Length: 239
View 1 (tube, helix red, strand yellow):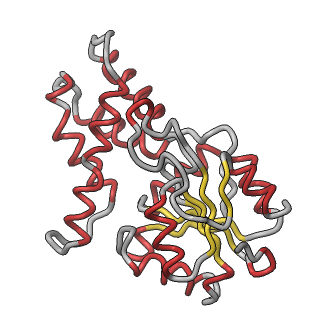
View 2 (view 1 turned 90 degrees about the vertical axis):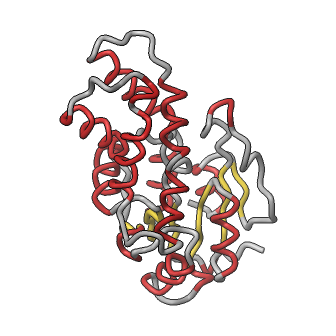
């Protein structure tokens, strides 16, 4: 049951919940392809393929197979894995570097900035993301997202769903689990947050993976808030 009076901070999963990574990456990939003379480029499939390598590479870090590595490095490794498959071999180093930085320029969903701005009037608002610190700072400035703080993998030196992330966020925000609300479009993330005592808000993002979405098709538990936009989360918290 939602305990509004206890909430002091609302922290947000970022990729998929706050920003539309798929459309953003597809758009930038099409531009990169055009720069080397490819006009008919499937940016959506490229975005899906790039993202598909993200979680397996993070798992290598979580499992101790490799030392701590930021997701900027992991994104670049995955990019190198797939450029040939999509005919982008001709991209030079500068172009590949810039394309990798597309993750720093992701566009927000239309409701994200208005909703977060409303919540900021009453609560601490922060990222809670597997993104790197620099990536999230750049993304936030580019998208004009008014965060109070940047909680991320670099702060905890761990990737969600590692317990260090959730317990670390609670500690940094005052040590009272019920005072922290986690807002996410991903049930696994909310499940971990609830496990450690956070309150939860589910935001449905049916277009996160375009027509290929197979998970998070609906709220899978009785989250404290279930919404279709961040503005609805602000409504539920009387902002």
